[in-house]
Image (cartoon, rainbow, N blue to C red; front, side, top):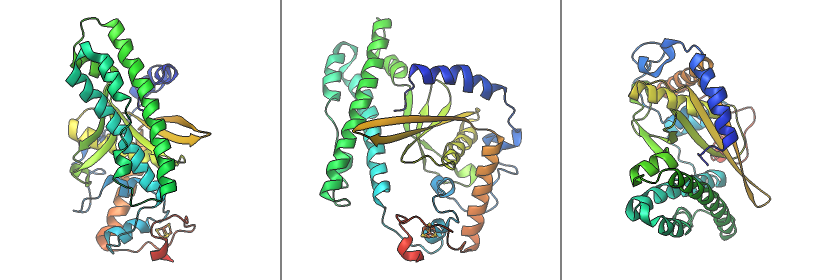
Length: 305
Ligand code: SF4
């Protein structure tokens, strides 16, 4: 799901990348300037990035309840499924890389055979959280994700092997699977947690990728923006492009849509504003009040109503 098809590649290479290199980004809004305003955190607290980037509750009362009142809420079904699908994808990519290293180039057919076996461990670990019917449905969906990835990755490996007769395992992985999943990052320069985990980082071009299962929301771009700022603060190179991969299941199919975007000044300012507001609320213990419209699957519904 993290790999681009030829059309997407064209859009990225001929559209977003050249545009992102031409566009002016205010130096003050580059992550490497984390030690001065407006990036320098105002309060001495650390927040996970999702507490800033998730705005499912319009007043962010969920953050207040978690961080100030210490209310623990059970995850709703969408959240549990999202974690299962994410984990399935991460397991697939790691398994593919591991099998290539273990088996070597000469035994790629063994890699392909072994990779066919779907790993259902993300479901097994959560079997007490969802009903048997939901479990069955989730199993089908994990199967879709796994098989989709299998097709993509096998064709990428075969393509590289057919063009590079003297390639070694390490180089094959870097060309066929040029992505780091669950990239761990220290966000403390920007007042964020030291243990952030970006869904994926593509190496062909510095691009942050975030995976979502569900409906598109404008605030999803806050997540890629936050990770881009953190990467700039840690590695000191520009990260100009983000991509949100939306996975949805329709008519027994996995439908994938990608939202490429330039991490421009507007998004950077929006992220910093949200971070400062959230920090102020948590530091001062201010209850922001109820949202105008509460969604009925909100894990805090019972606490708020
Ligand atoms: S119930 Fe409403 S106010 Fe409370 S956290 Fe959920 S969306 Fe926000």
